[in-house]
Length: 157
Image (tube, rainbow, N blue to C red; front, side):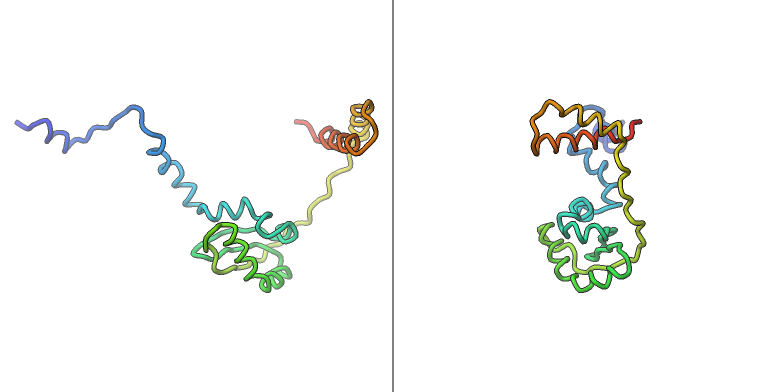
């Protein structure tokens, strides 16, 4: 006859019940980290702050692998960025707080030009003016009117 402890070794029991959340986190985030490493996610999120609005408007970080950051940009912009690569690497690593990027690779990608927002509808302009009509004239009133135009001009649905 086998003892209870030998049965436990050959047939491990599954414990169903409360478990610490920390025990579940690795299994939940592993698929996300396989797709994008944490440093890559941080660079994607903070790209505007890292490189500045002018460069961020014409570039997009794509992939960080083995110290090489792939950046999508137009062909002519790639030449200019090659000259700035040491400074960009310094900014990126300084932002991350460690050396995560050692090389930049530029990928040519055509971007459609940004479309200008449509002008606000006359009804939205009139409603915004009416909403701030009781306020005294000044910068605050002008700012609130502009905000009202923007909010009321958004398509619904």
